[in-house]
Every structure is written in structure tokens, then in C-alpha cells.
Amino acid sequence: MKPRESYYLSSEVNRMDVDLLIEAFHPVAEQNPLMGAEEFRALKTSLSLHGQLEPILLYRGKVIDGRNRVTALYELNEPQVDYIKLKNNLTLNELKELVL
Image (cartoon, rainbow, N blue to C red; front, top):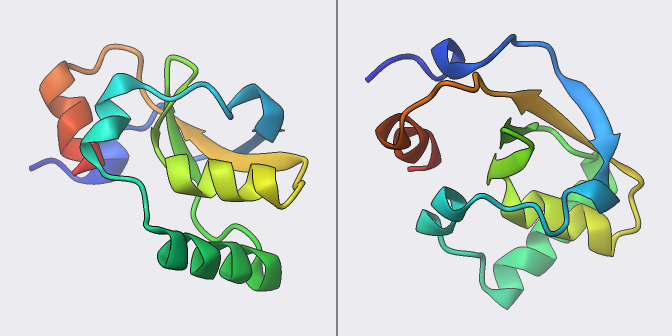
């Protein structure tokens, strides 16, 4: 397995309006199940206290990794989300590898 960073367009973290991502989930992201209610509440509490510690991953403008974080930030009325853009030429297997 390649290092995760080898799939990144760059390791630079960018910011984007969370509203633009709330419905932009890539089908591959569904391989990772959504959190249960209790775990999701804990995530929202953590984000409220500490902010977003890990950027989400975007592939061609869609969320590959970070659906729970995007949804939690949206529900917390946070205006922006941190993200890293992935290379546009990744294979389906490479995308699955990143999600799992």
C-alpha cells in the first residue's frame, strides 16, 4: 500500500464553505459507514471544543473521506471546512484504499 500522501495533489490544506460539500459525497465514501448517534454527538462535541483537527479528502470536488466531519460541521453552523485535494487520475481501487 502506498503512503496516503502519495495520492494528494499537494499536502496543502485548503478551506471551503461547508455548504458546498454537505451534499457532495462520492459513492466510494459509502464504504465507510456513518457513525451512530452517540459517536456522532461525541464528534460534534470534539469539533466544538477543539475545531477540525483532520482535513477531509476531496476527489473531483466530492468528499471521499470525512462525511461525518462535514455533516457535524454543517450542523454546528461552522462556515468552512479544511480539505486536501486528491489527484484527479486515481483508480477506483486507489480511492477505496483511501477510504478503508
